[in-house]
Length: 136
Ligand code: GTP
Ligand code: MG
Image 1: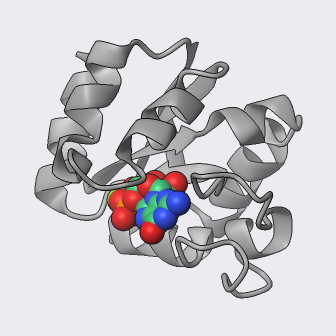
Image 2 (image 1 turned 45 degrees about the horizontal axis):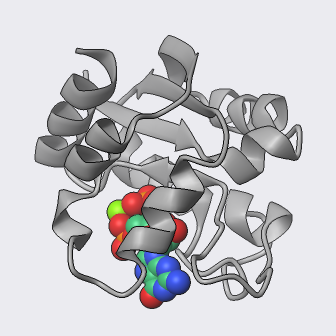
């Protein structure tokens, strides 16, 4: 069975949207396999976002992810990686389609990083790598 790592980022947790976000993923039919609330460390985030090192949004992104607790979850189901990314919507919440998590709950807050509520793995390789980082 395919697995993906979902993170509810600090904006989602702080705005009390964790339950609503998890409910949407479950309602689509994916199965929650593991769940924890964590205060991420810089070390974990440097591994998680290693592909973005050197990009202009990298440091603001890490600082944002350190700004509050994160909910980390593993969801399972056929094609869950693509299915969750479709449910999450486009990276930029301003243009993410209505009906998606980012489109319905997100907006541009005028900050240096796109606060877009959720992360989802983008391939089987990334999912297994990221699950190892967050769940060991
Ligand atoms: P994730 O599921 O969080 O990985 O989102 P994604 O795969 O849609 O985006 P990507 O992996 O390219 O970028 C990771 C995160 O960096 C995004 O979710 C945003 O929070 C932030 N980000 C990405 N691109 C930009 C950008 O061009 N500008 C800014 N300010 N932030 C960005
Ligand atoms: Mg990504």
